[in-house]
Length: 585
Image 1 (cartoon, one colour):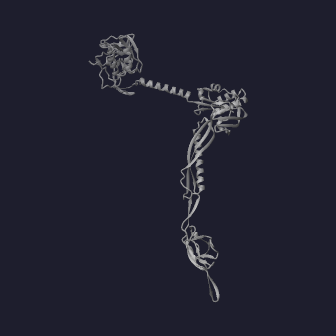
Image 2: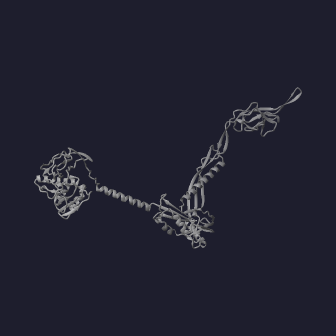
Image 3: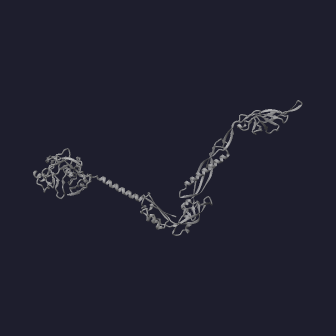
């Protein structure tokens, strides 16, 4: 006989697998009280079916009252204990008293009322009841006060406190059914119970399925692992150690050559860069042009110069004596000569006269002048003109036109924008590890001019194209040469701290288009030589609070600042590569 011990939460599949894997053909299942496997009649019948398939003889040892009843109903043998080998319920077994338990044959059935709770009450003592039934007790039965026998079927629902009818007389009926009822034998030397007795029942403890326990355990393991991983891999720490420093100066001289390769003493490699760009420049038109209508009128020309006919050519300029505005004759005109006549004994001079149409030299309403006299260009001063009426028809309109200076301004604007764009593109093309020290713009051309000189326009634009050329050096190369030039000034126990190379503005001398000399007085700082790896090992896993003072004391530092990330994280990172140690002056 092979004994298999079951747990409270063992499921039917696991129990079937244990029976299948058992060595013996006779298997005893040791089941604790309240085990899940004995709480369902379906489970027990499935267990018996699988045992038959495996050709196994299966029995149960348990103290679970409900489990005993369900096993008995299914026909599965139930034992009180393994050593005595006596089944609690067995087919065609004579009635026997074991302690306070009464065993009823499987062919007997106690009446039930639709699966409700039933209580069997005995007025006689256990010994007398057995004798009346013709059964000798197996051992002495303890005479105890009357008790109640309660049967709870699988479908029963029991509250914490229920009213149960207790019959006054024992009530046991025989039946061919395989249902078995187990009850308590109650002695008869007690007072009669009322027909309604309140009995408090205790609920069966709820057992959680195995998969739920496993899920909870797995969740706890994952949470713990996540917390440990977070504490190890996420935090980082920045440590800045400020130590005393002393200044050291040296005039550095470095040659940058685009044809060089690597570093050779004070000569480093220069890297050439080139980009192209084009930009449109604009300028405001500043030229002015008067447009409109020209004033017209008539001028009478007088010839007092000679007796000959005088011809005034077309387009001859006539200038008004008042406003000095110029009008021009629209046609040629012949002016008769001067004549002399005697009137009343006196000689009178009669200049020859002729009218001619004139037009203002320029448009504008300022030419609408009143009647006035005119001088005539190219003739004697004795030949004059005069208007009898005011000039009229002149109107004024001023236009903005493109001047030569405007085109020059547009070109300058275009070149400036193009240069800025080309140099910006050049700087963007240079890696962050390099620094450009020389830049120039060349091959500038212009195109796309939209207006010519004299065109009416408010602006003029033009496109400039060109190339940006630059030379850069690697910051690490400069730092390496500077350290070598300062090497003789660095004591063994000191470290040299140089300015950031990108911030150094060298004086540049162009030896050729490919070779340049950089000079600058550099001020470095000498600070204590601290082993940062040693500092990291001292700080790993320690608390942030108090560690700064320990490091300050250990290395005679002026100040130590420790910053943890995430903020307010109490511990310094466990991983050395998550600790950044900086030594500064």
